[in-house]
Amino acid sequence: MSARALRSLSRSISWIPTGKPQRTLAKEASVSGIGLHSGASSRVRLLPAMAGEGRYFVSRDAKTKTRVQATVGNCVDSVLSTALSNGGVQVHTVEHLLSALEALGVDNCRIEIDGGNEIPLLDGSSKGWVELVQSAGLCIATDDEGLERERLVPKLLEPMHLHRDDSFIVAVPSTETCISCGIDFPKVPAIGSQWLSFTMNEDKYTKEIAPSRTFCIYEEVQKLLNAGLIKGGSSENAIVCSIKDGWLNPPLRFHDEPCRHKILDMIGDFSLLAESGNQGVPIAHILAYKAGHSLHTAFVRCLLGDMNFE
Image 1: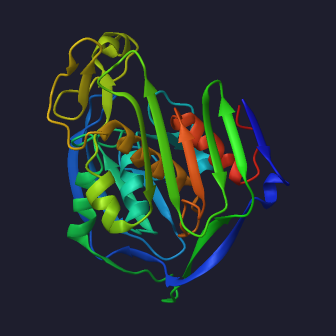
Image 2: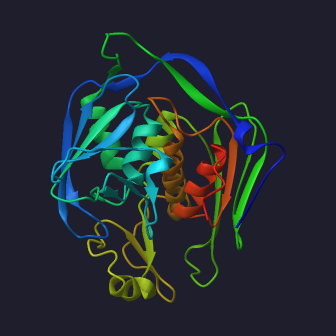
Image 3: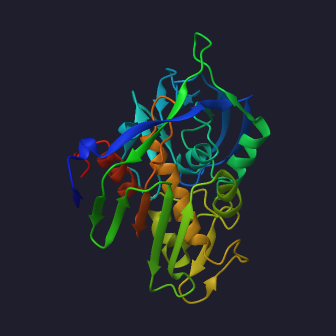
């Protein structure tokens, strides 16, 4: 893997004021479901949090109520998902929930997990999380002194580039947040090569990105099961594509649903740039090709000037 920037990586982003206050949930909301990889049932409660606290997880099953902040510094190695860890407490498959929270502007949120350490997959998209946030509503967050805090947003100052084999992420300065994503499955004709560009917007995310579901290749399912993965996967929470027979559980919600889901994942992973209740996904045009969770989070580390990501 290699990384390149035109100037020092530590100066690649600047945090700029938005003129808007940080927000949180207006009330508690909860949902239960099955974890994709563990197959375990868990219940997640989303609760309001104070300004400056950011988004963080608390496991109600752990002996200690250690906070696991949703920041890239807490990322740990994980296969086919994004996982966080702090003080011996781990939380798995956080990307879909974080994607919804980031896109809907839930800057501060306490996320409690009861019954396991994996976030429920729901229907394989972030649609259920969006609906849960909408049911709770949003309000201005205040700190422990009752004061509001201004929301900051990271703005890319210089081009950056990170690649691993034939996968890469490139970001260039822009006046808006735009994500362009490409995927290529030459051995799976029903998926093939797909490209999509998306400009960050809450309403567009809700309608065009959030409903897109995770997908898998049917011929790879047994291999993943043998590796102890996707124990909770089913045709109810993923779209399954066969190399020979195409989509096995149609209809698709979009003709390019796999590519849209990759953008959903990117937003969740890039949200890990956020700290202290500020926005995570930077103002930049980000272009990713055949990128996965590990490359996403490595790129976020690069944005912070951390080169120790291999």
